[in-house]
Image (cartoon, rainbow, N blue to C red; front, top):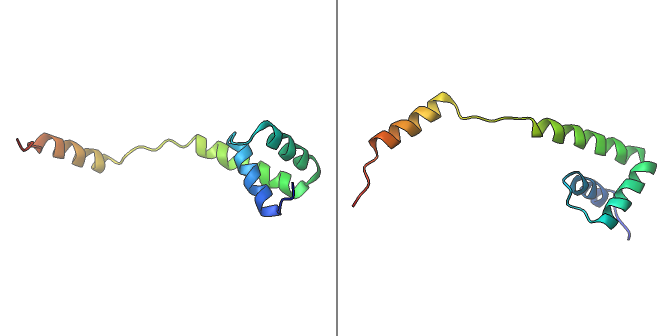
Length: 78
């Protein structure tokens, strides 16, 4: 299977998100053993993914207040 560097980067991202088959896992893992640039890409992506997984988003107080105000004043049309 011939791959360009760009598609290999895409494969690495898919690998990080467990979207690759067992055969693709083997190809990506063996490529990482011999391609230092791709390994650095993998490590950077893994670090970014780990950081993003830790992000906790919450709405602002003003958004919560607007939602509560709307729900208090809501009158369904019957």
